[in-house]
Length: 197
Image (cartoon, rainbow, N blue to C red):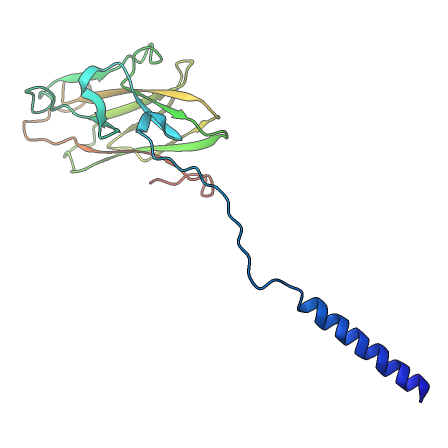
């Protein structure tokens, strides 16, 4: 009986020890961490969009970069004309706007331009060429192209030159009433390796 009694006592002690360990887990906790998420204007954001050297056609509207050909008393771009905002031969010093990766790590950026309406042709009427600091074109997009991807290291800046061609360059002549308005997007989705807005 002594051996059985000893075995029972040891088993009871082990059960009691297990119960005390399982009941020692906490039932409530509170851990606070600070978060710094200031909302800033485009030129100061993680993916900064900064006005360039194109005067009032590219500006900030409520802290967001805007491209608008209806400045002053104008109501749009002339027919059978070509407007270039910036200089592709010296984009670093003459550009419509710049894009800077202000994050501390590298990202792939996908740029797209989606026209609000169909312009009725396959020509590149609105073209955005993205240049690196050495003057190399890393992406060329228009209302006719799919998204273009380029890599951006931490702190790297790119310079964008815009060409609006209503028929004076390579594009067919557009008539009064044509609308080239649209949405320019710069998207980062490192998990998908290339996702557009």
